Amino acid sequence: MPNYAIRCASCRFSGDVFAKVAELDDQGRVLCPECGQRAEQDWSQKTIAPGGAAISFTGQRRASMTEGFHSSEVSEAREMFGEVHGSCIKDDGTVEFKNRDEQRGYMRRKAEIYSKNHQL
Figure 1 (cartoon, helix red, strand yellow):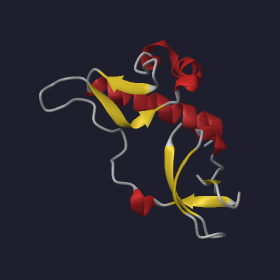
Figure 2 (cartoon, one colour):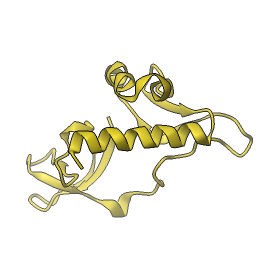
Figure 3 (tube, one colour):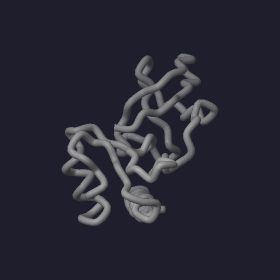
């Protein structure tokens, strides 16, 4: 499950919450753990560029710092991403890319899944 930095206007809660992508509403808001109201994502807390690091400077494979799944969601995620891009998802939920092209393909597939699920 992704981690979201949020700021709730209802109860003034500010912090990180874990939520499934399916739990986001059409405006990208998640439920506040304190009051249960929809809370906006706090984009000022985002420090990592979308996509994360695919390859280190030494050319070694790297796990993405922005992509990942809970271990209980791995099989469902692999099914959604398909055979080619699902192979990037490891058993523990981490996502590893062999190279930049594999990362780009994964991100394109992620965008397709998102637009299909959110009917963009």
